[in-house]
Amino acid sequence: MEYLLVMTLSGSTLTAVSWILRRLIRDRIDAKLYYLLAKAAVLYYLVPLPFLKKWYEEIIRIVVPERQVELVKMGITQVPLTWTKYVVRVDGRTYMNSYTHIQRAVVIIWLLVACIMMMDRMADYLKKSRLIARYVETAMSKRHEAVLANIKEQYGVRRRVLLYQGENGKPSLTFGIFRPVILCGREIESREGELVLRHEMAHIRRLDTVWKMVVQFMKILYWWNPIVWLLCDEFDRVCEMSCDEAAVLGEPEEERKVYVRLLIEEAQNEEKPASISLRWKAGFAPNKRRLKERMDNLMKNRRWNRFAAGTLVAALVFANSMTVLAYRDGYNEIMPEDMSQEQIENALVDHEVLFAPEETGEETTIDFEEETVEILYDRQFVDEEGNIYYIPDMESHGSCDHSYVAGTEYRHRKNSDGSCVVTVYKAERCSNCGTVKLGDRISVTTYDVCPH
Image 1 (cartoon, rainbow, N blue to C red):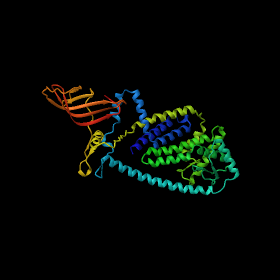
Image 2: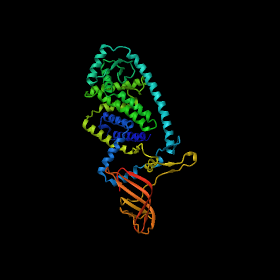
Image 3: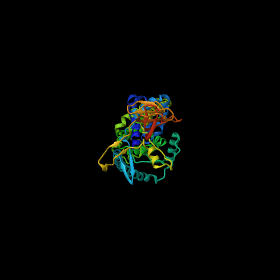
Image 4: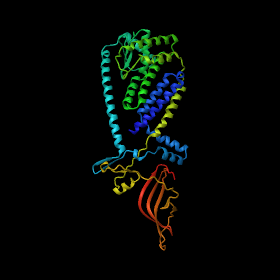
């Protein structure tokens, strides 16, 4: 669930950036660029990228001093233990802290709604596929095959595509993934029919029906996020506008006007209920409220600069990838099989969280105290007043009348990979000769990067 929260942060951030960009420079950039950004936002919602966090942290360590990196991590990225899942299994019984109970309830509600939406979408898809199957049962005419072959060659499409004459006045559309079917609501061999086929072939070349299914899956997964619903609407809008651009690419202004009139006629037919839901198809028919925007977009003859557009998209996508730093670090430790129970408990002393089960009526969570003593030496003694003494490697002075003071001993060991381990013991130190008597171990703390 925590991965989903970071993924929705990444996708929502890029969606907002794309929306702001469209408001600022809408008339200067083709819809194709916004379509690429919409696809990138969809992928951020669906693809976890925790591995990028490690890469970025390594880069930050090279650029920023290690001490500052540790301060940033301790001050910003640390999550309180109260908001961490902990489950303890003892004597066949399972105990969970409060955060785990809350997260389990949220996951149950999320899955319930997602399953209901998924069943609704699948029922709708099966219904529409049966409707399309009525056309597929008939063979294409030779004339239609010739028209289709010519359009496929223009767009470089090698997949098998089926073309059928749809009902007059019904919207034109493309349905299917592996063997897409085009239903053309215009006379196929007419000029208007050719423009419609260009639009639909652009959908097929870019696998838009696949992307629309992916968008539907994203909507089911993040049904609770209003920005996702806005992204779905934006995705459909820029998808159709970019296909409009592809259909009239390189055509004179008169041809664009023919296409605009075709959009107006299709919008007038929108009052009749469409036979195929927008959920699972790519279609030509415009939404009335988007008609003017599609018309304006067509009549603006912009120059598509692939390098500039690609650079802008890459820069935005890279900048947005910094949200992966919000992933919480996981902890995994594999113990040797021959370790004793006491050794295991000592190894985990710095990582476990103790809490009382709910049956006891208590809700206290015991957090381990952070290290506050400054490490000055690899071996040092700290008395109860906080005074720090260096511990040299020497034998005990037998002739000394020892006068011991209670405190703690800190042992610091730096590893070759840049990490370090700090072990704390109960101890007593002679105030006369400096001899230290070691007691029980208190804790062991491991730092991935030594801050001392």
